[in-house]
Amino acid sequence: MQIDFPETTGPRVFPHPRDTEFGVIITPMNKDDRILPGRVTFSTDGFFVQFEDSGRFIDLSGDAVVQPDFNENTFNRQRVSVVGHMGTRSIMGEPDASPRVDSFIAKRIVLQKDIAVRAFEIFQSRSGGSTLDNWLRAERELLSSAPAAKSTRSGGS
Image 1 (cartoon, rainbow, N blue to C red):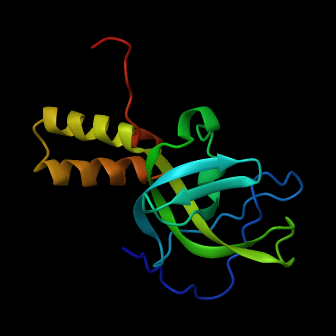
Image 2 (image 1 turned 90 degrees about the vertical axis):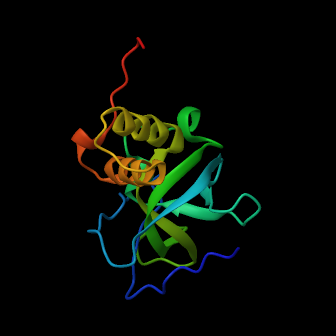
């Protein structure tokens, strides 16, 4: 299965988050944004997302890779859902510099384990629908940037 991303309209510049001199440029939600499942991989060169288990690795950049809970111990090699769009970023760190690489510009990223917990909470509340409806609702809630949408887990059962 091949994932076709929509063509980008106009330049989208996102310096890599590991560049200390330049921050990630924040853009509002746009029509190109999609929610996709995948697997995150960390390397010494950056962050990558694989949207298919046997598919190619795609550079990952954007707001999601600088969110406070995005770290290698939690996300590396984990199944995730990510919201964003295809674009490019400079590998030199300067917004207008070349060369550029294709990059999935992620606005937010969440572990699918957390989505499953939230979907179960929705099921338990009896305010949900089918299993799929509960999953999609949980995914949308957790991928929104609203802090109230995050699932809170207590130490007990």
